[in-house]
Amino acid sequence: MSTVKTYEYTVCPEKRIGENDRFWAACGLDSLYPLIDTEGGEFLLKRMKEHGTCRYMRNHHTLSRLSKDGFPDAGGNVYSEDENGKRQYHFEKINGILKQYLDYGIKPVVELDFLPDELSVRKMRGGVEEGVYDNRSYPADWGKWQELLNAFIRNLADTFGREEVRTWYFEVWNEPDGWPVAEWPLFHKLYDMFVEAVKGVDKRFRVGGPGVFQPDFFRDFLEHVENGTNAVTGKKGTEIDFLSYHIYGMSGGWLEEYPLIMPEVQRFCQQVMWIARMIEGYPGLKEVEFHLNEWGVFSNYEKNSRDYPVLEQRNSEFSACFFIKLADCLTKIRQNFGFRVNMLLYWGFCLEDSRGELFAGNRGLSTGGHVMKPIGTAHELLALMGDELLEVRGDKSGGPVGCMAAKSPEGIQLLLYHVNESDPEGELPPVNIEAAVSGIEKTGYTIRVICIDRKHHNTYRKWLELGRPDLCDTAAIRELQRAAELTCDEVLKITAPDGRLIIRRRVPPQGIQLLMIEKEGE
Image (cartoon, rainbow, N blue to C red; front, side):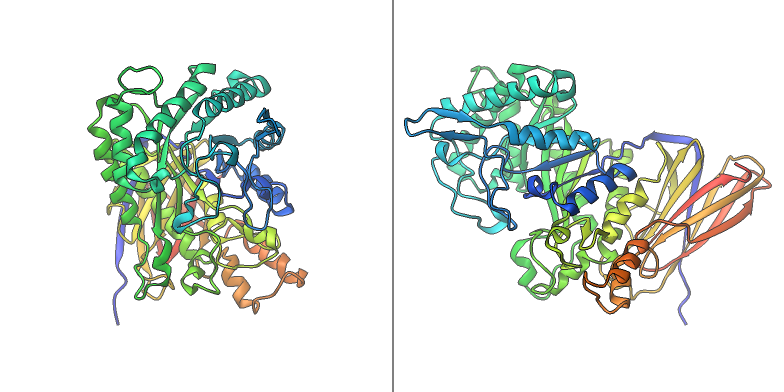
């Protein structure tokens, strides 16, 4: 009989390592514009506001037309020309959508893409691998494109006020990696004109890009903004406030290749550290923010588990655990190496809910019946951590076990996890975690425990247990909704006679436990 391995951690409440900036509280999707007007979208927006799980939202096709995910008009559609070629701007739709974001306490990441067909050298003909559309190319008329950008940014400043818009982010494009290498200089020109349009209205408006997933394109872009010739000013370099990049655990056609290469948090960390090294080579970019503004355990959000069984992991606790481990590892990279990820934006929203489908394996935070998926519940669990992050000593992050710590006026929060990416079904044995909290008052403490694992707060496992009910089974849907509520699973009473609290927990594979520690009587 094998012994259960024990991991030990020590936390001191006085050793603060920084603000808990909730950099992970962000999401987006291609068809976000129409989704927010569905019942499922309204439910999720209200839920995110209530739990504080979304600070920023991002999506594509702000300026172009789009038919996507069953929505015939999913783009911003801001531009047209009459029979005489006279330009007409239509900003009412986008203004209304951005106002909805703000009503729910969410700031926009505004992509100034893609080209309206009237201005593109290549017309929209649908997507190719990784969703690269043909109209993601340079303008046929650079002058008209510049005038559209100028008019759009002025419209936002006039509609929402400069002080408000200064809290937003403006991004030049999405995934221009698909551009031919010979056209990369034209993308640099596109970026320079974008910066001129945004900063020309207000120098404090924040601009960035390139929103790519290929390191060669990213490095070429860094070289341009630091050392290249600005296509607008003729001077060296171009202003930039944030750099953006995308990482997915498993991507594209790999879903059909067996044996499958399983997604790992380590791959994310390696890529982030490679990017950090690239940026170090450009001293002028030292203070620029870094946004990982698309991520997911698997790419291709619209693919389903019926066709690709491995995507059941987007339904299960696996994605929830992956997210918690990733957030911890990125926090530790900031702490140990000084490289900060300012935004971690999950590319998923409520597609299944809008379609009336339950646990279809699409990438999203919720599923049919206004039911949160485990990864959505994990966002809500992480939001319960206090505003001050605390130092944790013990086994390094990146392995199968980890510990996060924070402090709030109410007490101390410890987040323990046991996550092994090679064991998606949780077949490995549990582990013991011993957490010592030192330097505290010599008194009694109450510890409330909330778990996410196969048996706790797991809507997907509950759905399987109920026999995969459909939306017509209203009693089952209510039971699923209750499963997502983060009620307390266990209450512990422990004393700290010497000012040191010892907490011992057994954590199952693919399991998360939040320990909320408060002094008795408070």
